[in-house]
Image 1 (cartoon, rainbow, N blue to C red):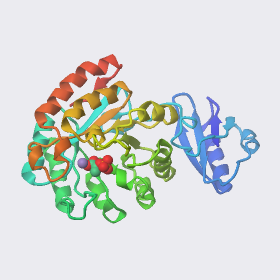
Image 2: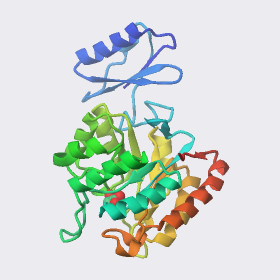
Image 3: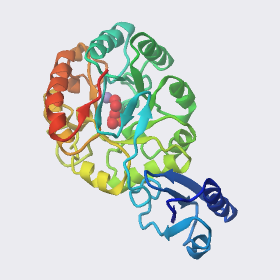
Amino acid sequence: MLIVMKLDASKQQIERVKEKIIKLGFQPHEIPGAQRVAIGITGNKGKVDAEQFLLLEGVSDAIPVSKPYKLVSREVKSENTIVKIGSHEIGSKELTLIAGPCSVESREQVFTTANAIHEMGVVFFRGGAYKPRSSPYAFQGLKEDGLELLKEVREKTGMKIVTEAKDTATLSLVADVADIIQIGARNMQNYSLLEAVGELRKPVLLKRGLSATIEELLMCAEYILHRGNYDVILCERGIRTFETASRNTLDLNAIPIIKKLSHLPVFVDPSHGIGIWEGVLPMSFAAIAAGADGLIIEVHHEPSAALSDGYQSLKPKRLLELIEKLKVLAPVVNRSMSLS
Ligand code: PEP
Ligand code: MN
């Protein structure tokens, strides 16, 4: 249920509604809006009686929420969520670009790529230190040493760091370094991990599972918001279909559908989506044209030598080409590029 407060509701009246919700054994979630405050109720097993809230001062309406996910739903919050990181506003009119290697491999690799990307004005640098690999024999990441290198990238370039948390055991180490914590496709339904990042107050990039429906993705985001972390960015990264010519099938349908169902920002990862570097530029343009708020792109200074995902990685000069073309495309869809 969503309790909508009157335009002139006082702080005290809002507090009284929250106290009432807690007294009933449920959880209140204050959702500030441009016009008025709303308070979402979660934790109820059955229907909540609307009348007891309508009788409270300052309450304008009590609306049942029809979707199984509540806090991520547009029914509860009609305005787009904007995730603020420094002066950057993810989910606003600005398009955000996250770029960097699949994995942090070495000091030379990470700084060659980071310096090139930084020069192009990219603000968010990606790189996995803990890598969830399909094969136990594949490179598993530099782990803590990788995090140290990412920390250095931030110190030396000022770029913000996006890196994956693979499990709850190493989450706090990752959270110390990351400006955005990535939850990978394989971990989308790792509920303990979702609950743990829900306890943090740090933005989370939640990638869609390999065979997950849009509703399942939204339910997983709900786990994070339910614990009080409202800074969640959803990421379409391709799903598994019968098609084998591409690594995955990038589900561009998901962008307008999620935008309709949820207020959270939506990113697209065309690198994993198609899995072929030549396809990354066209799929990036398609994603932005379809309404994505940002892109996460894999870049490597020497893709043929990459320890993971080289075939889908762009060389820096291709990333520059992508940025130049996105600058032309952005105004066509009423957006601008967020670069430093
Ligand atoms: C990655 O970003 O390198 C990655 C492992 O992505 P995904 O979880 O989408 O497969
Ligand atoms: Mn990768």
